[in-house]
Image 1 (tube, rainbow, N blue to C red):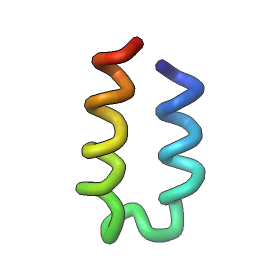
Image 2: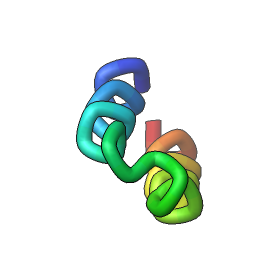
Image 3: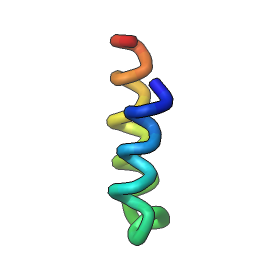
Image 4: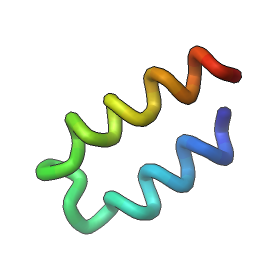
Length: 34
């Protein structure tokens, strides 16, 4: 879970404000699978 979270934060670091909803959409299902 930590590794997946770090990947999303690293990838969206520059556009965190723009991709925050996208990040949450990806993080929630990933957390459910793990």
